[in-house]
Image (cartoon, rainbow, N blue to C red; front, side):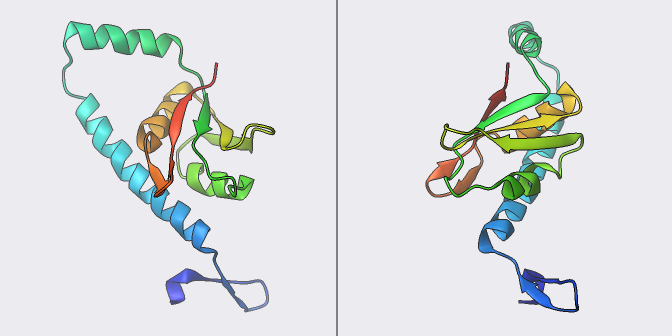
Length: 135
């Protein structure tokens, strides 16, 4: 369809890969999920939950470790998935660790929004993202 195409340099139409479309869809769904979680997190918490949250904040980082990626994941795919989150700086695929990448944001709060938005997200039937703070 026309929405699956993008204008190329000399007036050409270039077909987007299905993986890019899938990552864009994943990003859109992750943003919605993050927005919903943010609304839920604004509700009052009991002391036990607050204490766990504050302990977790002590080990937070502006860099996330992303696991569960397909072997075919490229740097470009990671950018497409994460650049829609505010504060995205860069990403790289860990050499020698299949399915592992690192994504850096300007601030811890921005990394946290991305972590909450994409945690447990299913890229496809066999790959589910697992995100954690890189320490």
